[in-house]
Amino acid sequence: MYYHIATFGCQANKSDSERIDGDYRSRGYQKVTRWQDAQEIVINTCSVRQRAEDRIKGLLYNITTYFEAAGIPKPKIILTGCMLHHGSQKLRELLPEVDEILPISEVGFNIPAIRKDKTHAFVPISSGCNAFCTYCIVPYSRGREKSRDLNEIISEISKLATEGYSYVTLLGQNVNSYGLEKEGISLRKMLLSNQIPPSNKSQYKKAKILPFVKLLQGVGKIKGITKIDFFSSNPWDFSDSLIDEIADNPKISRFLHLPVQSGSDRILKLMNRGYTRQNYLDLISKIRHKIPDVRFGTDIIVGFPGESYSYF
Image 1 (cartoon, rainbow, N blue to C red):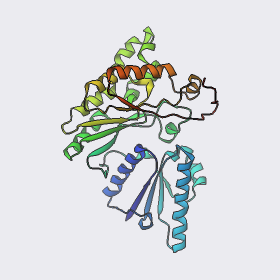
Image 2: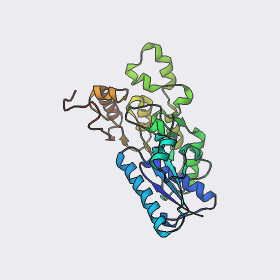
Image 3: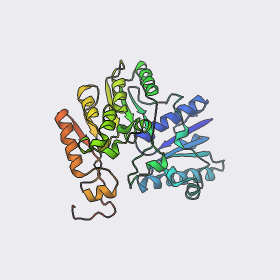
Image 4: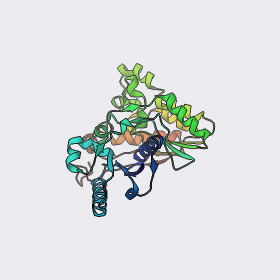
């Protein structure tokens, strides 16, 4: 049996496709580079922009017309990824060519992923999200946040190191909140440390050493791993302990992707981002003070519903 995987979207989707690849290989399938040669086609979808969904529809049209013209049976088409937020019933109406819908949560971590890059590995540490930003479909397509076991992640990266990998990127919709759902802690509600009221001081003390910081410390101790990166982080729970760990650990990349989304407090509130413009600027200053050689990347949404040319 021959299979083909078509991947759309971000690094998280590419990492998921590597796991799907490993699952097929473990069952004796052989991968082909052309979907025309496959008996099963997996389409790992993106739904961030309408254009991505249009490209997926175009691919399905091309597959159907190709096999109809050739007069041979169409391969089995399996859909996974972020378009699943539409729900099974609507997807059947939108994409009647699809034979099976596969929630990515059903693809486990018990089988090694098949990675093309032999020195740099993307390693998922969590799936889903609890933030519910008003513009984002991740909680609906991937579910609520669920963190992998820390020891399981350390074991996977240790094995990667023995295979020659030296650079790992930890992946999550919000890596900062890794493991917090297991401890019942919400730093999003607390926001930044200088906003925590006295009644929450004991809870904040418990959260000072975040599970994500513990994970970074564990990965940093693995022999052979020389560079650690992570994507994506969010301003609302970028704690002091995380800043200190980055500053103290030379293996961690000095490039931080920290989405701001908007410079308007009114729009940030409409987005349900949980921080203000000043919160973000204060955080940038704090990080720069502790990590002088830091570089930042960000995301900005322009033309958000309700936004006008007036800055505030």
